[in-house]
Length: 304
Image (tube, rainbow, N blue to C red):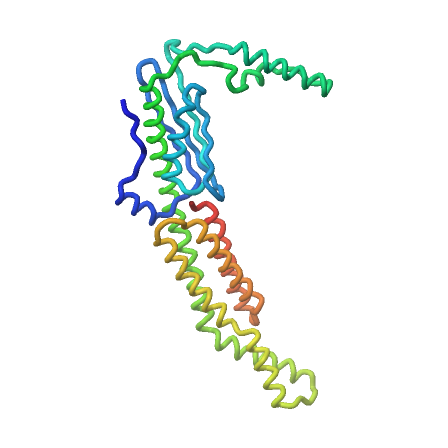
């Protein structure tokens, strides 16, 4: 048996790069060969970068470099944990205690106990020490190849699950971007009325003061106040960010970090819009915007 190296063909790779992938998934692959039963379990969770950790029997640590490399080729972000379990159904595994390691370990523990003057030796903790228990069954090249090939199978499942969850995230994010776009367009259509309403409100308050004010100076001040509360730029930037969001989703690779940055920009513009809100309706629309943006931010944290 020759261990195959996990590779996607160019067409599959091109399609894969245009998909959103979740960083959270779990996969399991099992295989029986004679009295040997082998199981790989892989789970991945959110992480800023790619981090891999594998637990394999000491006798098979030689395969770690290979499986770490195929993981790096297929996954760009996330914390990936892999656990390989091997069982022999007919007593094929001969576990032996490494007396030399045990003596050195006990000696070291006694030195520590002498200094801290406390602490009991827990046999279970000692047995967990790397290299203390030796599997006398020397794994053949065939077993190594089997472990690598089975890992490839489990990794393939993991990527499939990440892709399935990614499709769900794609739908949610597109829906929220569309919701933001609808709110922005609604505000744009009402923007002139908002300015007129704000001006009338300000004039009404001034008239209630029952004091004489230079009409020309008043008009200048009102114009300046309206300009300060103008939201045209914020609305334009929000529209641009929505378009950019769709473009990122449909482009190749690197979706997670770019969408995370985009969600921060959306949040900044919606906060500014809320601060400039001059009518109850605009305030409510700004709140709706912030809710939609926050929902996007929550989802993109899980994208590769």
